[in-house]
Picture 1: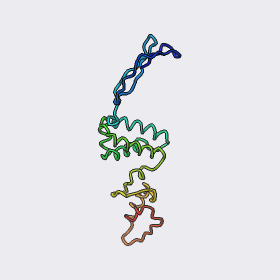
Picture 2: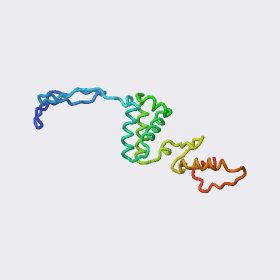
Picture 3: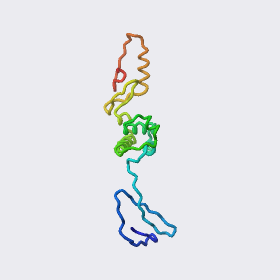
Picture 4: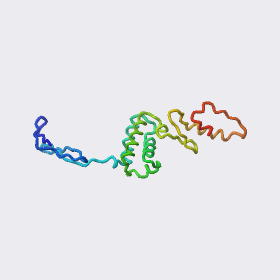
Length: 171
């Protein structure tokens, strides 16, 4: 441990005590002495939904994502293996270290502008979930309108699906 009286002047006052579960915090006193203290580390498991979402929201907003909150909620729900409603309804819920790592990896991929559907591996389309990856075009919301219009065609009408993409229209 070291006590500093001025910036250039320090004296040794003994060996520091090392604790694996602790890290050091410096505290300044009015008489200009600096004391080293020990505070417990916050385990990754104690990261809350709120804290995880807040940090991802900052990164995704800075990356220019169009819907950073929705993206972060979807990625966190996937990392935790829960429905998005759980994320919204219980912001104080804790994450396990594995869930936090999975979410951090997904959020980093999204911050690099990878589509959420590719990160999750699925995309909802009408009443089905399609499996998607980089080899498949992600169905756009407008495509659902196209299907709705096609369903209103008279029976026996012929439709040609050119440039199938994910195959969502045919399904």
